[in-house]
Length: 137
Image 1 (cartoon, rainbow, N blue to C red):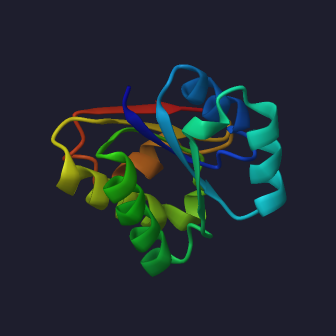
Image 2: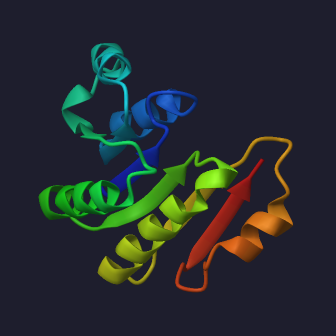
């Protein structure tokens, strides 16, 4: 199957990470907490499909390095599921730039909290390169 990047994949999106792994996707998970990442690995019946990227997504240079490394190891990313705080949208911009440079069509699922101003977020993010962009709050 394809390569999926999950940002926040050890927290609120842990079940999403495991769901993609069960469906035989290669799942690169941006994680800051190694214990939470290990927990997902022990809970998943398909832990061999999980690839941790230990980085705080606010560290833009390391984020870029880790994503490029994941692409080199697992192929181009077809889907991104991201729980990125509205005060760190530059991280999402980095992800969009990298993924868009490697593949023409891909999906971004940007998960937002219920109190988020979606129109404002869309104005702040350059999404014109993404074939399909989905925002869920």
